[in-house]
Image 1 (cartoon, rainbow, N blue to C red):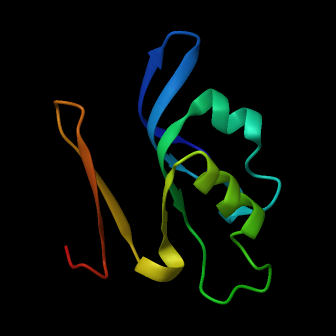
Image 2 (cartoon, one colour):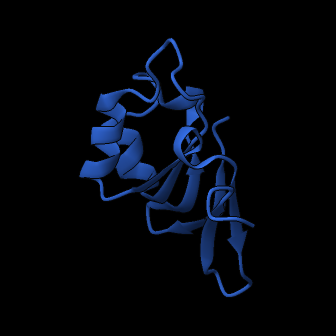
Image 3 (cartoon, one colour):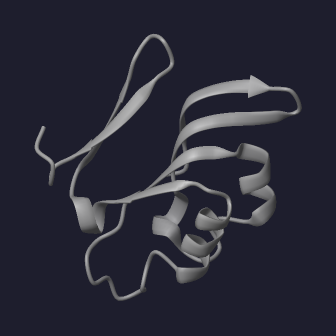
Length: 99
């Protein structure tokens, strides 16, 4: 699942408000170059609790944090819903918060 939501171009880069992380946040899913190019505001990591692979990888979480990217995880919050408004604003709600 490697797709972005609310995509728009800004100069030579691509600005991305929300980004569903590929391969559950595995170590090969996110590079510094990709983060610098895409510059998402939010990373959604879809991953099961206590998975045998240890996803998301601590290195990936550190990279996201270093870029100031908000991280939301399904293993901690359950289902996540991103609501986008016509004015370009957005918010994330989780099953834990109640829909």
